[in-house]
Length: 188
Length: 188
View 1 (cartoon, chains in turn red, yellow):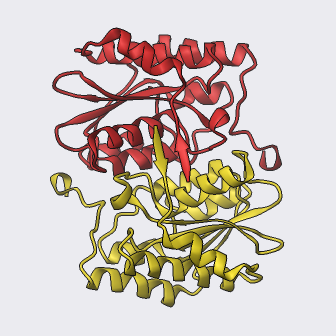
View 2 (tube, rainbow over the protein chains, first blue to last red):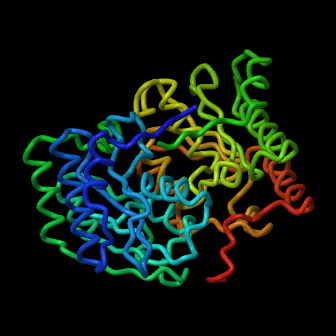
């Protein structure tokens, strides 16, 4: 049996807000704030995500990167948000009502795959994959034109939302000497 | 909080064996048997996997597809095996001692990404992705030459091990009217 638990600070932070996030920028602002908190409180990598209802802006489930604390390489922020949203809604298809995944950095190869299976109808990204690679993270072998691939599957893609603010978190993490946990010395 | 639990029949089946799986074919035979059991007992899709120690053949963790029963689109057999193996070993890098992922069908786009982050040093596949697609499953947008991409990352790839036997499970699942859970009618 495997359990995934959000950091103890997270539900409190969100309960305090108790409101909908009307615009894509508001949703991204929340997600970037969660990525900051995850770094500051030392509970994982500099990435956060959230599954929102597109029409109302209601947050269905947040996610933060938990790879190191959970000892689980699969626990990227997007995966955490998707599985928690599916648990909240009690179903494995997030297709109706229309939901979106907001991610502080464009998803890696694994998370792009997970996104396609999750049923979300829109992806909103802050920092680019190349921004994460610049600080040493590996984005994996994504399809060359991944945004186009998603659109072909009926998933809208919105990029570069508050990108400078999202990049700031990545830089702060690197400058603080944060673990670049995907680096496996034996094959680089 | 999210929990992932193997079907109740699974640990018993494995405890009963209590032995190492010396050859790649023996490991694949076990994994294919798990995929049969998962279908027969109605606990998920027709896919199974296992993380083994390459040198000894010791099974570190099995995995079966749990998407429908767990209500979680991420719960593919490979993901389940990886996260359980990391829990058993208490670390997010399965790189040393050398471990391998044995999968009854070649991994989809998400699982290929997860495999790269997991640190396993070898992938062994039974059925091909095209075999799964033939019964209606979607393999996602994999890199065109995914096996080559993995090899570049230092992951050995062995394909077509007991492929006919692995394909038989897929066919039986389709013939029994099993749920093809990745089919989202709105975008196909």
